[in-house]
Length: 102
Image (cartoon, rainbow, N blue to C red; front, side):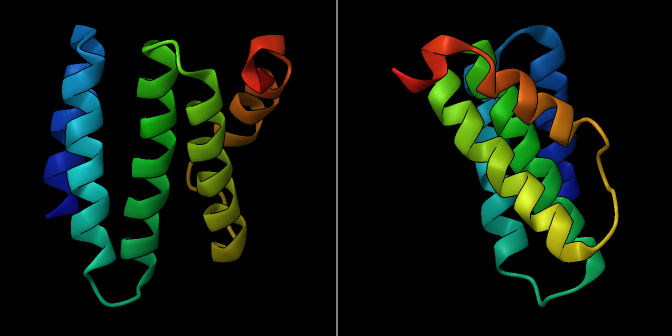
């Protein structure tokens, strides 16, 4: 079921509706967190955290975006394989934005 929230969230990202996207990704996180541990559950958590970072960045919240993307990167590292290759470059980009730390 988290995939439904992820799909809807990505739809809203594509439409530029960051608030609705954020709502869907948070619901996906809630759903995935309630599932037993599995690779699929971890992949959903990683995708939700990464996409929350994208939504927060779209809302102009660089600090929050950095927090979400760091969570996604930590979970991907724990999983031991790359689910979303854009996580590390995205984190590096966010860290290079001076306003991120204000």
